[in-house]
Image (cartoon, rainbow, N blue to C red; front, side, top):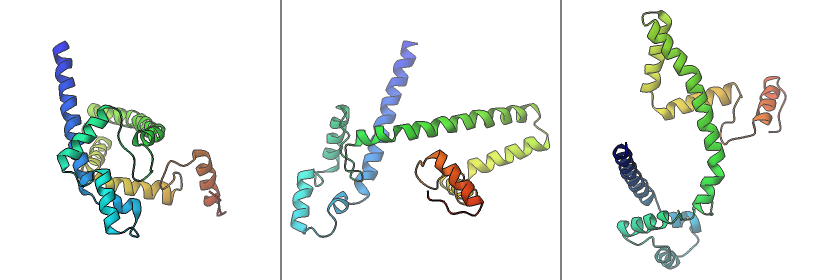
Length: 187
């Protein structure tokens, strides 16, 4: 058992290393973070000086090594978008993420298991074939298209959920009822 756990731990470390390398290389090649920070009003000389101070001119392996070293100490840097430490941003967004994971898990358990058991018990029934057809389509369609479709249905058409962000559930439900009766809502 100890050997199995050590193998799994080693695999987890390799996967985390590969994911961090891929994510860091994507982030490194996405664009110029300095342009987002200072805009276009800053001269090129000042930009180059800031690039040197921030370490943006360093080779990729030097930047990645610095990132890994800081990450092992719990320092993930500063978010360019939020302009605050990345770890603080992660912890600030964690409740919404866990809420989403919890709700998705409940839906999966409540729908998938009973439908899968029914399909296994009666594989030749019409309902079982429909369930299999919908599941094949669900697996085949890219996730981003499914997300756009679900956002359209539940946010735009039905007005049950916010189109973006977490939103306040109570005010959303009250607003959707007001919208369905034709009254304007101040959400």
